[in-house]
Image 1 (cartoon, one colour):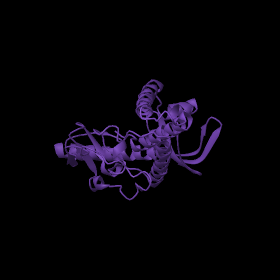
Image 2 (cartoon, one colour; image 1 turned 60 degrees about the horizontal axis):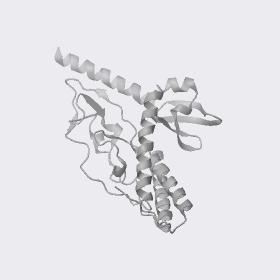
Image 3 (tube, helix red, strand yellow; image 1 turned 90 degrees about the horizontal axis):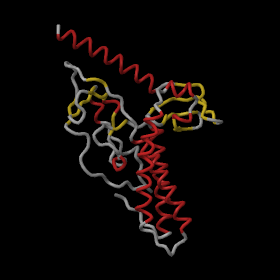
Image 4 (cartoon, one colour; image 1 turned 90 degrees about the vertical axis):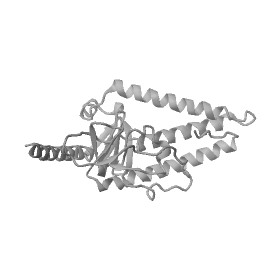
Length: 248
């Protein structure tokens, strides 16, 4: 009887996973954001604050708060939770800007440094949003065979070579050898192995290392590469203004 229950549960879980996968790959003829209209949209991920998608002109992401009310409801937008998360991100960016400003050579023109600092903070924020997209979780039940890990990542992280790094070449998908994955850091839940990745060239920006990281699409990795070049370029401009970036 227990064996039959486990089989039925696994079948239900697989069906649930298929439903979530369908939602993640949802296709929309158009997505309207204010006066901007995106066509042939494929949703790749939805967080508490943003929706990430591929459209006819490339890749994009927008704030859920900027969508029409019907679409906000469709994507289960919680304005209170989103505001709290955005406040945390702003505070982190402000602290980062203060650390850089403390290294500014006051003999240099401040305006150019301020612009470069803003560009750098914006690129970093976009990188963090892509890399730290939430991964679907499922309740763990007796009888599910899963790959087991004591932790997701080792301590420490290498600062990427923002000028030359290609995160497509360093993406590791070893979790995909398991249909389901569990970790001691996340008791009571399982993840789908195909949903996960590790990448040493994005690890520096992992904001919560108690959770696994979403396997990025080719389009998302291309965008990270583009943002890395912007980070390098802004850092180079700061160096010209006598500002040393404090990478902590």
